Amino acid sequence: MITAEQKPIDEIREMIAPYKKILALGCGSCVAECASGGEKETGMLASALRMAAKMNGEDVRISEMTIDRQCVNEFVIQLDDVIDQYDAILSLGCGAGVQAVADMFPEVPVIPALNTEFMGETKGQGLWVESCLGCGDCMLYDFAGVCPLARCSKHLLNGPCGGSVDGKCEVNPEVPCAWQLIIDRLSKFGALDRLEKIYPPKDWSKKQGAGPRKIVREDQQR
Amino acid sequence: MNDNSQLKSVLEKGDFAVTAECGPPKGADPGVVLKKAEILKGKVDALNVTDNQTAIVRMSSLAACSLLKTAGLDPVLQMVVRDRNRIALQSDILGASALGIRNVLCLSGDHQIFGNQPQALGVFDLDSIQFVQAVKAMRDEGVILGGETLTSPPNLFIGAAANPFADPLEFRVVRLAKKIEAGAGFIQTQCIYNLDRFETWLNMAVDKGLTEKTFILGGVTPLKSPGMAKYMKNRVSGMDIPDDIIKRMEGVPKDKQREEGIRICVETILRLKEMPGVKGVHIMAIEWEDAVGEIVEKAGLLPRPVFS
Image (cartoon, rainbow over all chains, first blue to last red; front, side):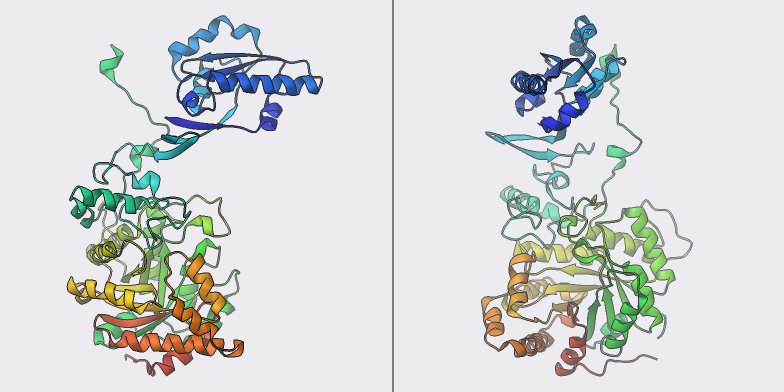
């Protein structure tokens, strides 16, 4: 999932200040799962903004609406019927959602209410952790299901570095050393010898070789 | 000084090598580097120059190495992969060789979060092992990453670091083997205070025949005070300082603590000299270059060999 956190309310208020009719637009996918931009959070943010506007004597109308996915045009199109009533959209989607909405409605300002963080997992109540960089060339087989690019602070492919102590990372003693996890898992599978070879430099062209990446699937386009 | 690595010559001749460390200044004055050169000349075979250590901005290691070279020392260019991608790293390797620098130590580098630029992007395009391998291919095959040919290869004695005190211990030797396979001709270790753990690691390396394939220089740092020992133990990652060392430092009056630190350091070197597989010592006297001459002398390592 894509994780995100809500921006500070003052920053949001500053961005929406020029507008009088605002649609707070939630997204029912990833950001709902990570409790930052789903229907519930959209309602809470809209209420907080309405209250702040009222206390400051501002004449602003803030409505709310949540669609299933802001990053998919088939869902964004639902805004067609209501968009004329607003002079700005406050999107609680991830960075992709904000841009998909902006792309479909070029005349309407779309303002981000969230800071998009990372691709990660829900680890527990109120806890999300990063686990994938989207490098375009998955190496999780080699490293027994633990990604050293996403989870080692130095992105080492031939770790662990000299800062791994008691299974913890030197950068933050609360963070497990990804390389200790890799070694532990590989030894369980009797595959520790996989780490005796030198992994060559990563081909970063698959991640950021020529601007924004694109997937074209002709079989899906017919 | 001839055009070869003094360090390599000493090691190949079979002498117990001595290297020290020179931290470049947080400023542009070449005089600071040249003064350290003057203090250390004749006391060591080669002098490492740290590369923005602990991620604090300092004079570039390459520039400081060049200054040392002009002062007649044999510099060891430390290069970390934290700040430069593979284009910049390979380019600086060619530049270093062109300036007459003959030793390079390839490192990962302290994470940027520890320094004075915590907002910096950590590059880590290559890791230290891949970097060693790349430099070796440049030198021995005359090719850069991707296989393109150089018009002339760099001439560098390639080194890497090892930390026998980090975890997991068994894997430390695997990683040492990988560094040697990648092309590390010499290894400088993390500061040794826990000689038992060091020997365990070393024996594992000896058993695997690794000490025959590279030159291992044991790292030492003279302690200035018990406070420094505690700070290093608790705050510097991958540092192993046994309590009896700290107690020893605490057991002497304040004005004798530096002496005691030097004494511990000399004792450590004498122990290292007896260990088969240890071919030299790397003295990291942090902002205490004056101590190096005394340590080297007391450890019976003077005079240093001279090659015509």
